[in-house]
Length: 321
Image (cartoon, rainbow, N blue to C red; front, side, top):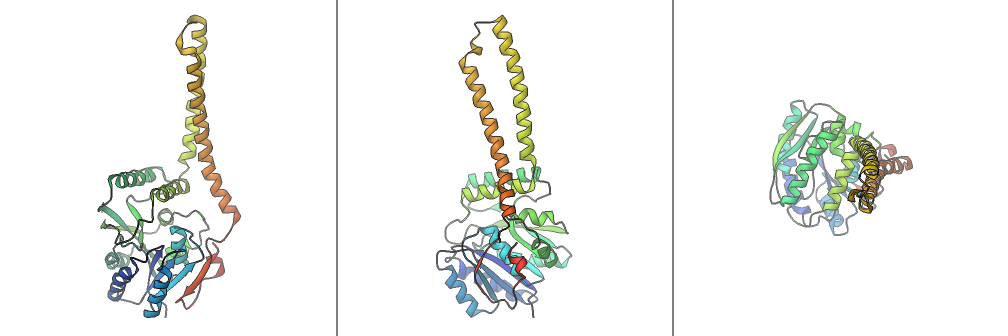
């Protein structure tokens, strides 16, 4: 008999949080009105996360797990969990307990009201530095204004998805995945549940600034063509400025031959300005071309090293997408 609820948790070097995660999640699972499974995805952890996951599986048959052959990244690990989850209701949450499992019953209630996507929206970030709060605030509002779809602000991957939504997500072939955008793109009836984000329970922060920045760039490039348009607009602006400067220089040369603005400094500034515009434009093009390159290779999203606890496995086509 297949479970009604599937709780997906990607794991990467989380040996300090796994037992507390299981305690709180299993308590929530016991309170749900139907059977549930906990799907743990070991994303190439280098600590004792995998042995601890195996122990939980042996202690509780509701715990299923996947172990990826190497570290493929958070978004791919979640995608693997979506491929294998068997429930009619799928919940995605992180292992650091910043996403409180106790919020799940309220999300299920929203699902019973007819919503097929219920995302958790942060109202406050406790014990996070001003730089983290500022950059997150800026990014989410920038993405909302630039993206082709309406991506809610201050939302992470913590969400509830109906089986119909998950089946559709599993057919999408993108390699550079931004699940927060994909769940908005698919549509369906969506709503939010507000919560205050707690600090990490234990261990080190896994999403460093560089990883967060990479995810932000991926979100912008995946769901917006505005960066390409910006480079076009900047190029047109530079052409206009160059034309105006050419006219002014010609005028100064004829009528003000000793003007200081017609010297070497002006030429150097113009060269640096145009060079910067060209390099930025090439960089933006490179981001889009790089994604085309990744897509056309058509490699599997991930490779599996170990699977346990599932009565059936998804079709080969689902795992290779």
